[in-house]
Image (tube, rainbow, N blue to C red):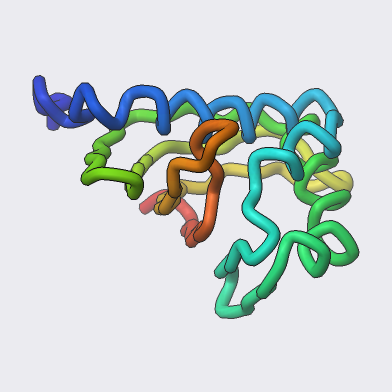
Length: 135
């Protein structure tokens, strides 16, 4: 199960740095920086639910996501991504471990992000997060 040599297309590399910056901002508690990387009309799917805008995410799961990111350690085991013109998509597979709300966390995670190039750089337009317990 090695990582494919060309898994992340060169033209998608800068979009991938925005994905990483979003996670880093959440982990450090800089929710303003995290929000700045999301398009206003971002659509976030998680656990069978949907948040349909940046404002909705900010008022619902942003705080809990930041607290969870700070309390856990996420590693990316495999990543791929492509860009075509002003659109890029980045897929990541990994594992998140740690302690949150007094409980042990150990989840295999998958993430898809779709980004669009704006004048100020890549912005996240769609996130789909899913996880499961390891076998």
